[in-house]
Image (tube, rainbow, N blue to C red):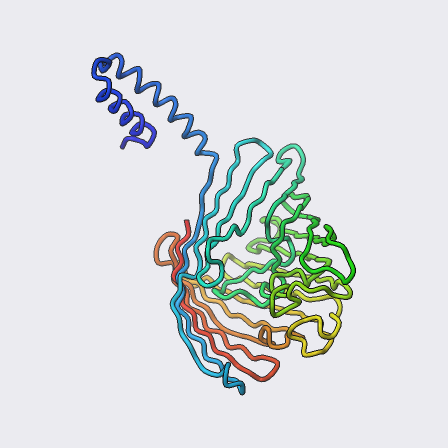
Length: 364
């Protein structure tokens, strides 16, 4: 089969022959094809340094809410194109790479959003350190999950900012520290780069314990109010606070015999916010915190089943105080899966909800 470069060069040569028939001798044609192949070959080398990836997720969902509030009580269903992701990674020069992730989520990120875009300087074989700068999800929290729905730890703690992160990474450890200009400032403070994040992740060597894979880590953020959830309209909503409240996260993920996987994570504030600073605190001093535990089993090479039990405290109805459920995912074809999950959640005000979600996903 003719490759793309040779096909393109042949087409261009043919075009030259048609437009310049006097020059279409066999010798001239061969020279032109060779020259064009060399040009297109250079383009192929250039394209070889670019990696394109992405995902398309279609979801059907049913939600049933049992509440004393007539505006919340009831059920609904929907079918949406939940996620379209397109990632571009470029690596043209040793020690330097770039990453761009475009994201579209129906009803959430319309039009298209630049979800991530950063430059990474990496010491590679010279020095096991790196510098990453741009728009990114800062290294606070881990958020491993088998489920379609995000864990409560992610809902509370995920933080996307324009930041600069410096780190040290080898086969065992990934240590990082970063700074950014958060959206939530203390009362009276000027607008400066005064929010910080740090993390330490340990990955156990593959041959340390036969049949066991283990990763564990901790992370810290100087102002948990900068998280995507706490800074929106249901949280602090761009306002100021009297004092910044730090946050901490700890996780462990362990896989036994490539079949059973345990995921456990805790994420929460290190102190209380002042009463009234959070839109969901009801005039009380809240110290929001969450945790998530999942147990997954690879039943076959294609079928995976997992259980989840998660919860939190001082969430004021923003997120469930406790939630449990089950998910099953089946690989229909290569890079194509069908998953179905059920979650039952209970809130601080005694509201309850049942959520059933089915997802068809294709990754490339």
